[in-house]
Amino acid sequence: MTDNTPVRYEPAQTTTATRDRAESSATTTGQASRAGDRGAGQQTHGVDAQSVALVAVFTALLVAAAVVPGIPVGGFGVPITLQTLAVVLTGLVLGPLRGGLAVALYLLLGFVGLPVFSRGQSGLQVLSGPTAGYLVSFLVAALVVGVAARVVVRRTNRSLWVPLLLLASFATTVAVVHALGVVGLMVNLRLPLSAAISADLPFLPGDLVKDVVAVVAAVAVHRAFPDVLVRPRRPSA
Image (cartoon, rainbow, N blue to C red):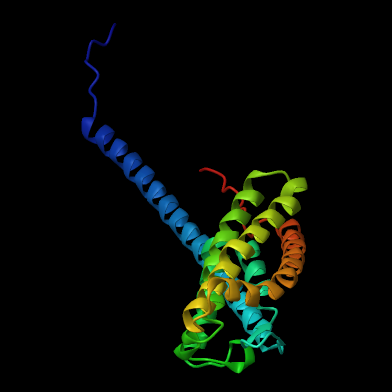
């Protein structure tokens, strides 16, 4: 005999099982999402900590460069120091954002009264002195040479790093540091343009030599630590 009794389905059980599977899947997805968020947060904190450490180290380098006694040149009170070397090196290694932040922090320390400028000077009164234009130029120079370094290191072959960074450093030294230095001499010492340029020129050869040192050191850093300016790509999920 054939059993013609119709098969009965249990929709409640089927619906419950489906709902359980959906809830389980949602729970797993939520846990994975939270884990990913925690991981991303940890990576962000790690990057922030590294940036803070680098900015602090290079701010200290700028202070140390100013502490080294300068060599007086001419009669206008502008000494030869290692500050331009430290400024260019900071921009070349850290790039525009962190390099600019390190120089800005250094300037802020001096403006609030810490004796971190050349010859132990400090305070806002330095902005009325002969070195004002050079101090202002430090921040601009770090930003400009930092942008150049980021482009060169990220987008060009390593064999081109030294000549391109030398070109960028020389141009920044002349067009930013010395140009603003001359303006500062003209404004604060009321010198005519010719006299201000004459007062500034003795510093140029030494600054170009310091640019060479800064570029060689920066290239060595980027080759040893390629992630300073070029972040590794994170694998996509």
